[in-house]
Image 1 (tube, rainbow, N blue to C red):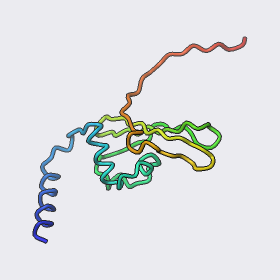
Image 2: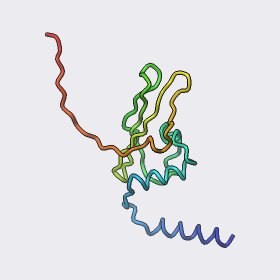
Image 3: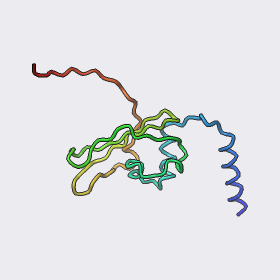
Image 4: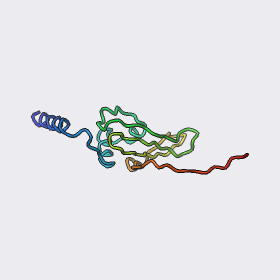
Length: 124
């Protein structure tokens, strides 16, 4: 009991005195997600969690592709606003199983938004 109280006090003190703007790296974020989501990458992919309990600030899904009628490619990109980190999680969709994340947390990678100019040709 005494050890639990000591650990609680340490966490409380760290939280109280740690700068709010301390940014985490991609790897640190992944480690926190693994711990808080019981190592379930699908919960992260589907945004099936209370982000307040994760402790990483606001998490926005900025894009998502895949699912029924869209082929077997599935992905979602999350933006961790407090840390300026984008994480893409890739899965494989099949009508029989839904979306699978066979590579576990290895299906997550840090990405950055890039603007691209494209040329299209339309009929007159």
